[in-house]
Image (cartoon, rainbow, N blue to C red):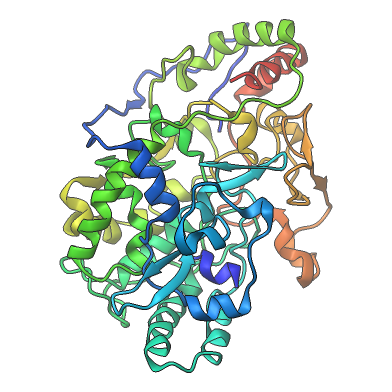
Length: 457
C-alpha cells in the first residue's frame, strides 16, 4: 500500500596541483525575488496540511493499518496526522471525505544512520511497482457510496499515471516523469482533470533522479538538477498537488500556504557528520578543495550557481536532453498554467553544480544516484558497473563516505525477478555512472584529504 500512496554531485573537481575547471562561459543562475513567509507556519503546514486531497478513505486506512512504528512518527503532528507515519497525511477531499495520501516527506524525508531527517531525499524510496494494483484491491473493501466515489477518483488517476512512474531500481525517483504525466491530463487554464490525455504522454521509460536535499535551497537560485525551476520557488514546490488539485481556486489556496513552506525550507541546515574526523587531514583537504573544486561548488559561504554543460561534466545526459517534464510540450503547458503566472521551467543542457553542505548524508551520488560513495565520485575506477545495497540506513561506509555496497558481475537482465529492483545497473538508459572525471587527476593522498574535508561541510 505504501508504494501506492507514495506516487505523488558533485559536479566539478580537479587537484591541488591541477588547474581547476574553468567556468568561463558557464551560465550563472541569477537570484530572483521570493515571497516572504512564516517558517513556523510553513513547517506546520508541511507535516499537518491537507495539500494532497485525494487518496484512500481514512475509514479504510484505519481498519487496515495500525499505528506507525515509533521510528516513523514525527513530533508536532496533530489531529489524524498524529496517528500516521511521517510520509502520509490526512486531508479532506472536495466531497468532504477524509482521505490519507502521501505527503512531501514521502520523497523529502529519509533516515540516515538510523535517524529521520526531514528535508533529506528518500534514498530508499521504492517506485518499481505498479501503484494502481493496491488501489484496485482497496476498492473491494469500501461499501459507502460516497467513499467509493472518492476511491474511484483516486483509482482513475493511479491508472492514468501508473505506466509512466515505475523506475527500474529502488532508491531513485520518477518525479519528473510523474509531473509530466499529470500535466498531460490537465487543462492548463482551469486545471480540470481529463481522463483522456490532452498532450502526448512522456515516454514510459522513466529517467531516474536522486532526490536532492532541501537545505541546498538556501543557496540555490534555481530548482532541479537542470536548473529548470526559475522565478517563484514556492509555487514550483507545490507541484505535487497536481495529482489531486482540480481547480485554480484550490491551487491558489495551497500556493498561499507554500509561501510559508518555502520560508521554512530556507531555514534548514544539514545534519552534522556523526563520526570522528581527522582534523589535520581535513585541513589539508580544504586547501585542495578550494584550489580545485570551489570554482563550481562554492566555498566559505560563497556559492556561484553555475550550470555545467553535459559536454563538460560528462555525466549521464538523459535528464538534460528534454526528458520528462523538460520536453517542449510540458514547458509550454507550465507557462500557460497557474504555475506559469510567477514561475518558469527553463531547463538547461547541463547540470547545476550543487553546494556540498551535508554531502555525506546525501548518498548515492550524481543526479541519478548511480555512484554509491564519494570515493567513487572522485575516483572513477571505484565506481561499480552493477551493484546492490541493503537499503538499511545504518549500513554506511565511513571511509568511502556513502553506502556500503556489493558489486556484482551481471546486470538486471540476469538478476532473478525477486531481487532485480535492488540491483543498480549503470548500463540502463538514464542510469549511467560516467563523467565527472575531474577527481581522477588527484593523488591518492589529496583525494583522501578532500574526502575527509567533505565530512565537515
